[in-house]
Image 1 (cartoon, one colour):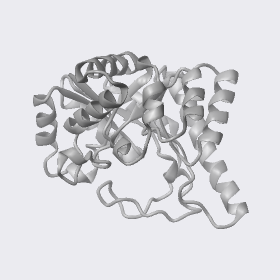
Image 2 (tube, rainbow, N blue to C red):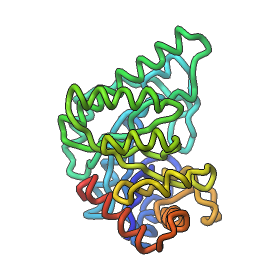
Image 3 (cartoon, rainbow, N blue to C red):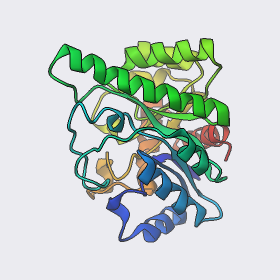
Image 4 (spheres, helix red, strand yellow):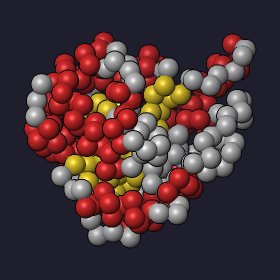
Length: 277
């Protein structure tokens, strides 16, 4: 058994064959957590998960690109949904209502993303501030609901680490995972010290993350696909699916010098422990 801890079957990329993709994953012993990026996709993730008695779970949250898209116009992938990322204000009550579903196992994906940034320093400062404000509101909701967080971080590890440390010192300890980890070992070590897990997906076939994968304690490693994106080359198709998480496990096993079975076991147990599934 494997658990894909970060999938997006709630995106348009799967609108014509969603059920088939899920059944194929089940046939290969793969469970999944569908992750929201805004209210629309969070609601969809809940709807999908509630169709299945077991094996399909969800997370709800507002991705950072939507909290400041009035400052920078960002084109989203049509496989997700709308063409332009429209600004969305985080409405805690709406997400709290979604969280009443027993299939909601995390708040995410939330965090910071400085990849698309304004050209002026003044606008960039405002851009970062809006993302931070939305992020902190969602951390508060996670703490209130006693749910782990699924964290998105792109070109923002310094700020994310600072925010997390301050939040945990002032408000309380959080649990969660750094989704699609692409930082360095120093940054990884700081997240691990705070008790966070590291999530690895098909990006490990593009970037050299061997040092982190080797050094990370097995109790803190999760596997994911981020489907429909970051397809492992072994899949030989363009669109990623939860069942292709096996290729991520194979690569981690190779890097760590362990068996596929061992990595499958500890990553699955880690997912069950963090997300209480």
